[in-house]
Length: 397
Ligand SMILES: Cc1ncc(COP(=O)(O)O)c(C=O)c1O
Image (tube, rainbow, N blue to C red; front, side):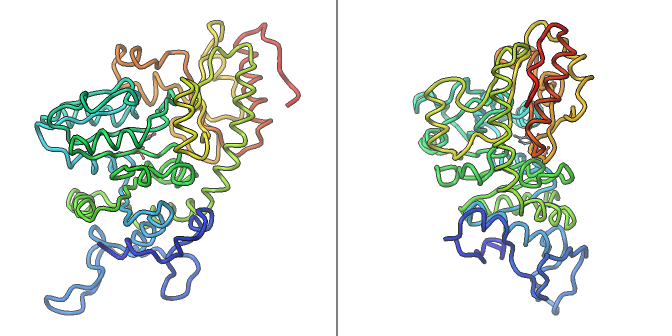
């Protein structure tokens, strides 16, 4: 494996410390430099240096990968141009004739990748309504991989990662966990038996809505070879500049997460008591069993809330009256983002599939940022009052 697999930091350090660390630059620079060079001088004929061509290796990318592996406690990290590229790299390991099981409410882009690219390649796609209830007897004969998210998007259902790992491994398949919503700060799937962890680092890891990036992390050297081959030969590595942006954003992950989670606790209570809100979804809402699983495998609920507005709320008026909150896709950034899954992140999913998986037209997803919670609640309350004229203001936050 490459230098990115080497732990430069003390693994005994707390995760808050590891999040701030990156390999030291030989010049002594505290901040990792951005090496933009596409090509590197070689030491001689038939002798390759550590760096030759940017698509294969780059010092800034290697620094980001080492920092990410150190945070996750993984043997290696490889970074890609987007989260979707990281997901595609994982699923590239599945062969025609094999089956992939996805959890219900998998990210919309992953769904399209499965339906329009993997299926075309002769891979059978299966969606698990509740994988927690599935047993070894439910595994198809030629299973290639199981890919889950926990909590799911947008319904925030919880999947038991250890159980999913035992199902996958019992069938001789891989378990991939898209850990974008929690990050290693709250949940570490490799410790729970996953073969690889996938991130859209565009979200919490980068944290500022200014870089697209994807990461895969794993321990198995054979998986390293696979992921490296895809990164190099399918030509989708993270650029040096984006590697730097990701590293910079990563350093504040713990404090951003802490603050956003504190806000989320208050905003959830506010939404649950609001007369214009019908339902609030959060990890564990579905059943005491899911709450228990989430408490066992994660150290926090994260900072995404999904809610359904009551029937008398005019969705268009609500959106038009938001002043602070951004109406935009994505999540995991310092600013609060509100999205409408049915017409945004999950618009490519068929109406039947959306209905089956409970993604309703009245559902909105809030990625809570680090602003003052009172201001976020004030913005929601004002917009809800405008959208339903007789709703009393909850005010005085
Ligand atoms: C859970 C999850 N996985 C993967 C992705 C894809 O990431 P990217 O947009 O960086 O390609 C997203 C994007 O929203 C996501 O929410």
